[in-house]
Length: 212
Image 1 (cartoon, helix red, strand yellow):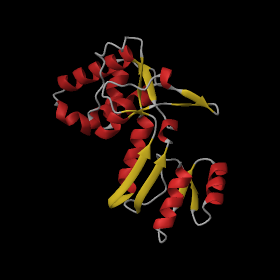
Image 2 (cartoon, helix red, strand yellow):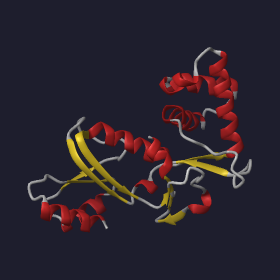
Image 3 (cartoon, one colour):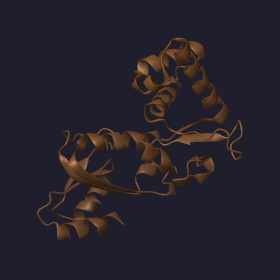
Image 4 (cartoon, helix red, strand yellow):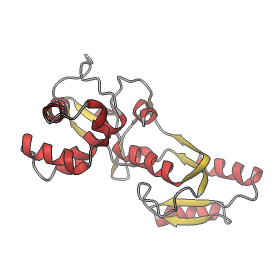
């Protein structure tokens, strides 16, 4: 577990400055008890109050399943993607430029072309922006996926990787573990969730994280 990993790190890299990060004050206190020399920081993993290029290494053990996963019906997400792609093509924007579009640009297309409810618009905008930026593969043609199947995209884990990229020093490293699959045809779904302490954990599509 994480405590054993940290104890190993402290034993072999005694000069390292360690910072434990968690949203839970109780977990920070427990971590502090296991490792008194570690500094505890209460923070959100996708909005870390840490300067750019300031961290040598990161250990993240079975946390990313707790981050937000975007979920939509397969036919709804497929239609939103198709209409957005058609609109961009009609506007003369080449596919190789879609990953550089702003969120506002994509949100405007979704709002106008799909007449999408504003309560779900930000989530769809975030997901489609990530799909374009990282060329995420979505196997809608899989025989296991029907029109009404819930399709999950680990958008919180993706944003966490973006934060890791921002805070790591050149040559830095990150070690992440979680339950999931590297199979390109794998989708996190409601059948793969476990309810723990009144929140839902989602399995991870590691092929998407590899693309990111």
